[in-house]
Image (cartoon, rainbow, N blue to C red; front, side, top):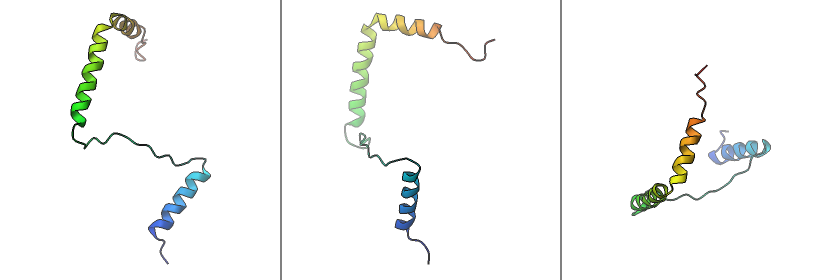
Length: 74
């Protein structure tokens, strides 16, 4: 007798639990929702304006970039 989809799903979930994993449900923004793209644009403008006003952040990022080591350099 062939196994049903629900039996295969149960077997897979049991194996994952036996491996020490547990299911977690997360909620994320619905990218298909009307207004989503506009809200992304609004938030990105707020962040860009805050970054532009923070001169110390630019200095910090420039210093951090200068300290990066290229793994291909000898």
